Length: 100
Image 1 (tube, one colour):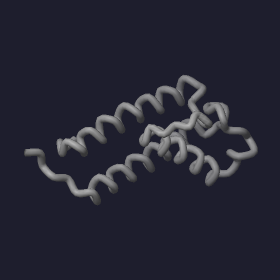
Image 2: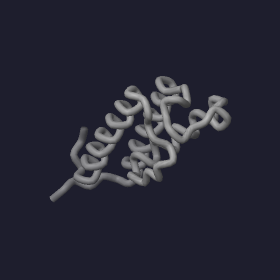
Image 3: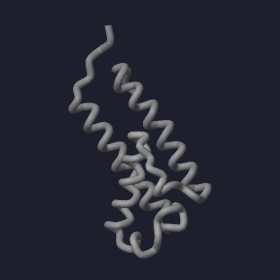
Image 4: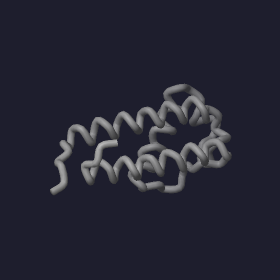
């Protein structure tokens, strides 16, 4: 029998992980040229940058990806690939109840 994991625990870990990833993306890939679909006018302030990267993180972790914002440079592609892989492993471990 698989151990049970609370929904609250899964939500807290997921939100923390997405916010951490958003912060890393905002710091490392602050320039809009790292992503296709972001223009200078909609990515000027820190709030706009954080929102756009949070949107990308949510679309990536939920595999919704509408294709409107996607990585263009090697740095941003590596970060998104790493995030996708780690989030898939984290989701699988949470579903199976395996601690990580």
